[in-house]
Image 1: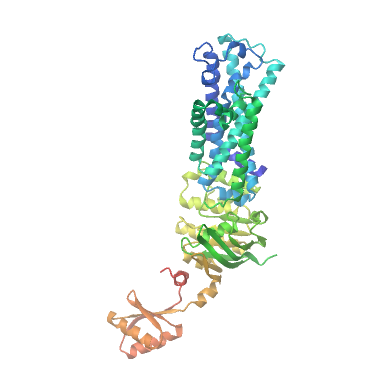
Image 2: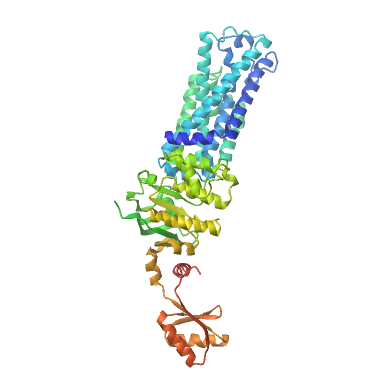
Length: 263
Length: 301
């Protein structure tokens, strides 16, 4: 498995892929974090779906990671795209047969791929966390937000908790990408379907029937990143989201292990 | 230690209601070069995929280097393969692509540059795969197959896209590997190439084995042809008549008469033609080559 992970790392550290992905993550991190402070007095709100995040919330010990938690969903979509592309391209390039000739254990191939991509996601999350907190710290004085509690022990605890929640969420999104890649065997189809579902279908479904947000997979995974919302508890999101990911992963793994590699 | 590199018994693969490979049996002895021939769609690649554990047979058994094909993990570390053309990551260089496979298989990374040099890509190793010509891609595929220092090398159309010089290099490489004890199982549509390098032949048609055995045995089974040309075209029909009266099958093809007969009948034909007042411009006994034998046996021409 570690040989597979090391081999995958060589592909993931390709400059266009690495810097392209980190660049996209930094763009969304900078944009969303900046909005929270620059639009703090805007009547349209400064948070997700027009919500307002006031000074009282930002001045709490957890204030430094508000931006980082908000960007978790976007980081998840980036992870979904990378995981899906890296998995499905083995079919489109025909390279899967090379991998399986050198490592016949298909579960080891999957596990190695997952480990390397999860490490890649952790690097992206870490950079996004540092940049988001730095932007927050720089913009807070201009928005009259007191940062006194941010780096107390409670504040550091919040940073760690949020980091873990975002990591769980982003890696879970990535697993969804891997599942789509394995099932559809085409990067374009896997990414299109994943992004379409998360950004359009789920939003429309919730707009039509609000109670559906309790059961839609993308919303559960985004809620994990933000540590729970007023409408959805963290525990519920973790349970339902975890079930979706686990069931999907089992189905995709069984298919991958038993399916003929005929291309 | 088994005597056979590949042994296949009653092996079949069915896709829905189409039988791609039908109950085939053959063996490839260790240390030989075995040509695997058959028309497009005859089941060559499907067979190779089954032998490499990429697809599951519908029925039958197979052994590679003495290990059952149900457990590819027991033999693939000793097998090199290039199936259905070279497949690599286009955005990585040739060197990086081989590094991915070297890391994956746990092979010494020094081999990567050595193999690039061996297949003539030493100075283009840092170029991206997507910039390679078809011939260069083939060479990289062969280098990848050689990474594990294989006991068995399985190559699917390795000379596709190579220029004559490249084909000659691959031929020499495969012969050298066989001389060093590597068994080479190679499919190619260039039958003249296989005839030169192969000790064994496995011939497939519509998923069924037409012939499997030493190439010498195959050629010995074939009846030689005597080709006769007369000075006057109008005499060709008379030569056919002479041959038929002597009990031989004869046809006119390309301004000459092709008579299916043993070599020692050629002087008799010469005398009979002379007696009939026919002047022969050419009289040549000829053994069929692999290509003619192939078409004869597969009935594809």
